[in-house]
Length: 122
Image 1 (tube, rainbow, N blue to C red):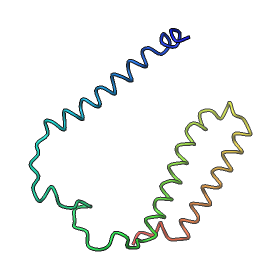
Image 2: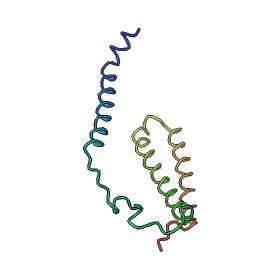
Image 3: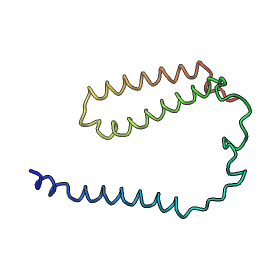
Image 4: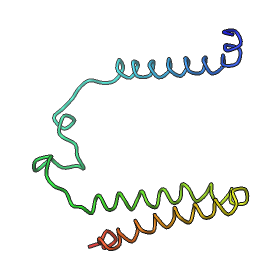
């Protein structure tokens, strides 16, 4: 049983050990050989190129959330439309209806975004 397992998965096991060894080796090599001379510029807070100016728990504009939802809507749509279009001949009418329901739900999300003003660029 074990010999059959090893004969089937031996190359994968070697690949995993090799990749793990190389990853750990590169991290250790970087830690050993990297220069360690921090200056005040390197140790300063980095956030979009400027110093933080208020509390990190401050409220932020809802448009950031709405743009994220908009990205998810279009990302999901594209990610599912390509495989669906390729296999449409195989999945038939049920696959077509299920994709139309999916697109309808995404359209409702897009209309919500539009009504909330996420597409208005001030």
